[in-house]
Image (cartoon, rainbow, N blue to C red):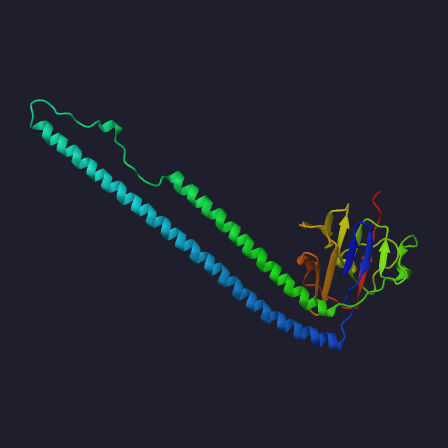
Length: 284
């Protein structure tokens, strides 16, 4: 886990995953089984949510169609009444020498009820309401899932000590080896044991590095080969990383907002893994 104190430009490390021990493998197998059950429950809950939304949509559709039908019938009754009045006037007119006072039919209009524009407006408002409900439901569900996932992976958290032998001589490394300060950018993730430890490093899975990075104070990206820009709602302060060696998974989380940042999936690990932190270069 990396903790960024913006005011001091200080970075603290507090979690990693190296090569799995037999006990770790057993724990991860059990954890995956528990996660599988949890995932099935989440799927069931999600299906129930969307089923309820579909029922709501169908109910609204039925109510709208019923209203339109009632308006149509009312318009038809009004038209039938006007036709009868007109027929009566025609009958009276034909039986009299001089025409009686008749109704000004040019001023008569039939209330057709719901116009096309009215229906479209109502449907548009319904769509906006449903979109808001769906978005809120999904966001709440995602937060719940990520929160559950964070609680699960926090049991594997261990302390990390930064390696002074691979640190740049100009870096300010704390005495306990857990903090580095005076920097504006960072790359954080996991690296293979055989990675190049000095000089220029190509930060991508192809070269044994799975990282996310910060540049220019608010530009985040995942180093996935071609970099993947990351759009985050809040500035990162505490980043959690979880590695599932057997599953080939490296996931990053915003611990403060309890949200998922990015995951490298389908990876193949063949050697020990170590936490990786590069404070990068100062910008200005």
